[in-house]
Length: 103
Image (cartoon, rainbow, N blue to C red):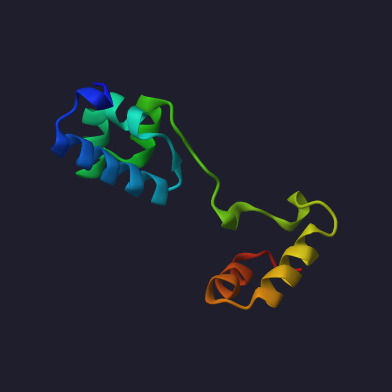
């Protein structure tokens, strides 16, 4: 189904599912959600897992921050990121600091 062919309710549902998919780290667009609307509805209702949805659609999931290891970062990058986050001092920066690998 194409997004422009959907009813208003379906469009709103597709946009809501898109936001939930993005929160799960899935890279896609609202037009792709429309294209795979039935499969996405099955995922949203719990009938299939996100892994099954990814297999059926070909979409990809971004790597969570926790999988980044210090060895994967170029020399000095981790130190610079820590310095910037520490200087910024917001609650988000504090949370990000906790996710960084231990030096």
